[in-house]
Structures are given as structure tokens and as C-alpha cells.
Length: 526
Image (cartoon, rainbow, N blue to C red; front, side, top):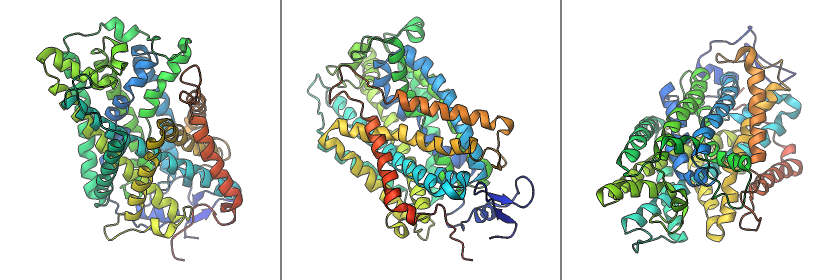
């Protein structure tokens, strides 16, 4: 045991011998938590924020799920659902930020669960949280890069004449090849030093902000036909809801667009071992990335919706973009005014670059989680994945994350239903990983938790419970059927995918891991 630190018997927490939080340096604080500094600590507060903001990427999430928003409620669901989901997501982020400040390690969520549960249940809580977290992250990367591959396919389609003009529509094999090429580029970029990635991250954050403001103004400005303010702020679409008649049901299904977009902000926690003043800048990264995303995302939704006039046509497979609604909005806006949709294709290119940056940041976060999880011996061949190269980059974890994300996408070749089930873990699985340590914070560690420099004070318990209840709510809502009648093609396989992951995690624990996995372990030589 290090001087000045003792282990709490009741909650497994590292406690300073002095009351409150000690103002130790980052490396010293990490050593208190049981780890030596192995990664390059060169990220500033802005750098940490930029990685997370780029992963959230409203241009990526809202653009690629615009069809979902239009189908389930349309303008009203998107315009009002976004701030509702945004505020509740911020509550989840605040609860996570408080714990992040107390435990600024790359392990993030699974480390928090272990320490908050204590010695008896800590290893199992850590195991369960860690596997939901890492599989959820891999699913996020899979989904992001696959959506970029689909975006490239749509850009090629429109550039060669569109679906109605003999344009080239890539096969599923070409799309998966695009996906593999994108992941290859992301793995190469993530093999570079963190200082280089920090530059790309800040460039990506600027690209996302500027891109949102340019597109939200340009698209409705160029369009010759615009929706009225009444349509944008009051119209509720029930015509495309696939056999669902309940307006409340339609509305909550439409929230998936918003909640899918607002994920991945645990990246700030996973980057804390590379962030200066991590116990302050890690929490700042989480909160600021969510807050700014909510603001600029709302503007983007409102601006683009003013260019929406015929929802049924935008969702139809017979339009030039083959049913990719927002691509058709961009394309028709320019074509109607200038006789050519080239300007709309360029705008799609702006979004594609944002998606590329988003995927790059996601691989960064994935690799740090894999590095930390394997450092604690939780993954098969752990010694291989937590190795750091001469540039202090977890190089093997980077390539592992890229390979697994590609393998997950291969399910799309067999069945899009299977693929959608796989990536459904990206939202629900990841949020379960978010909620577990928060739940332990407000229950088992309610009285023993010692906060870091960022804390919620007396509101910590209330915020934590609201966060947990919101995750439970969305887990139920997004497991409901999305179309009727229910068939093998319309069944929502999210419960199957998430339940399967839960079964595998618990079964592997009972059969094997409980005998050897003891939770986070120190790598400091005594």
C-alpha cells in the first residue's frame, strides 16, 4: 500500500488519509489508484473535449438516423424530442462526470464499478460493466463506419445520375469493402502519437461545429420550397409508422434518433490517463461535449427540417437517393434552384468527413478501453492488448478494435436484421454500462463515496437516480417492436442482442472468470 493511501474496507475505495480530495499531480493520483503512467499525458482540456465531441458528432448521428426521425413522428418528434433527450443525457453525463473526477483512469466505467461495489461484489460488477462497455463501444465503431460506407455509396449513386437516372448502386459486398477500408485508415491514424490525434480531434470538433452551422443555414436558404414554421414546430407524422397507431408510441420510437446520437461521451473518461489535470478536465470533457452537442444539434434539426416538404417522398425508395431522406433533401435543394444537385453532393461530402472523424475518435476510445481492460487481465490474451509502443500508444489494442468492428459488420452480408441487432448494443448496451456505476454510487457507495474536485454536492444522489431511471426507461422503450404486424423481418432484436450479451457475460463469469478475475489490479511494482 502506498504512503498516504488506505483501502476502504466497506466500499473498496482508495481514500486519502487527509479529509477530502488531495491535490496530487496526475501521475501521483494515478499511482494512488494503482497504476503507473504508461501513456503520453499530453491532452489539454480542449483536446479531451474534442475527442468526445467528435464521437458524439451531431452531423453523424442526426444525418444517418434522419429517416428514423421522419418515420416516427417527423418534425414534432425531432424538434421536441431532441432537447428532452438532450437534457436527460446531460443528467447521465453529470452523474458520470462526478465519478470520473474521483477515479480518473482509462478503465473508466468498469474501474468505477469495482471500487464503488467494494471487495465482495466489485470483481463481478467490474466484469459485467466492462464487457457491456467494450462490446458497446465496438458496436458504436461498427455502426459509425458502416454508416460512412453507406453514405459513400449514396454519394456515388447521386454522382452517377441517381436511382432514377441509372446511377450506380453499390452491392453489399462493395459497401463492406468500403467499411473495411475506412477501418484500415482509422487504425493507421490511431497508430500515430496522441499529440497528432489531438490535432485531428480539435480539427474534427471545429469541422463539426462549422459544418452544422453552414448546413443548417445553407440548405433551407437554397431550397426553392420551404416548410412553414407551423409544419416544423407542430406537424406530427403518423403516416409512415408501419402499422403503429398510438401517437405516444410513435413519439417514443422517434426518440431513438436523438439517443443514438448522444452516446460515446465516456470517451473523456477513457482518455483521462492522457489528459492533463484529468480529475477536472475529464469531467469537463463529458459535460461540455454533451451540452454543446445538444445546442448545435437542435439548430441543425430545425434548420434542415425547414427544407422538408414531402416526408413520404423523402422516405420512398423511388427517389434519387434511394430512400436516404436527408441526402434527397440536400440533393433536391440544389437541383430545384440550380438544375443540378452537385451542391447537395458536396454538402453530403461535408457530412461524410464528419463521420470519418467520428469513427476515428471512436477507435481511439475503443483502444483505450481495451488497453485498460486487458491491463487488468479481463480479456483473452490480455498481455498482448495492453502493450504500449515506443510512442506510448496501445498499438495492439488499436488494431484489435478495428478488426473486431469489421467482423461485427460482416453480419450485414448475411442479414441486415442480424446486423441491426448487433449494432443495437451500441445504444442500449453502452447505456447499461453507463448506468451500472451510477447505480452503485447511489446505493452501495452512497455514504462512502469520496468525490474528486468536480462534484455535485448534495444533488449527487438525486442526479444519479434520475440518470439510472432514464437508462431503464430507454432500455424498455427501445426494446419495443418498431413495426406491426411482427415478423422475422420487423421484430426488434435489441432485447435478443442485449440479453445475449448479458447471458454470455454472466455465464463466462460463473464458469471461469470468478476464479481468476479480481477486478482492477495494480501494475506498480512493490
